[in-house]
Amino acid sequence: MKNKGLLIVLSGPSGAGKGTLCKELLNRENFWLSVSATTRTPRKGEVPGKSYYYLSKDEFKNRILNDDFLEYAEVYGNFYGTPKSSVIERLENGEDVILEIDIQGALKVKDNYPEGVFIFILPPSMEELKNRIIGRGSETAESLVTRFKAAYREINYVSKYNYAVINDTIDEAVIKIESIIAAERCRVDRIKDKILNSKEDLIHEQFND
Image (tube, rainbow, N blue to C red):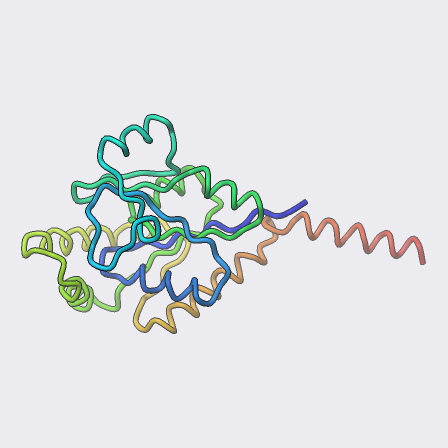
């Protein structure tokens, strides 16, 4: 019997570096990245179907009614959601799936799929977080204040996650995430079928001897 793949969820406050870490993980590991749907407008350099599926609010609401999302949330006036069928199908086929989503969405996924691996990405400091958000060059003065205030609130949710990783340097943060994933792959409850098969093989060999 094939073991299910791991559902790895990365989230944290805006500007913590989730996207950068996710890209680096995909370069190093054989994960399938779930592409989220959103109603927000694309940022410079984003590619439809690769960065996000960009939907109108009416399209998004219709998909909610059809139960097409593993989770969805409204963030800063826009909707974000994770398409359900493609994620579940790949997990059932034994593939590891990575989600890079906001905190609201991550907590909903945890309710619906508690066996996932939930990792909270933290900035090295709030000052560095502010600098990263400003460095995007995509925020107005008003939205910058909104995001920074939200970050203070969002950090309080770290206790609801399985793990927390401080994104001080990309390499160090990725190594920590890879270590978490390696440990999760060795958990007894995840590989109990393999353990049972190994036990049966050992008993069979002993009797044959």
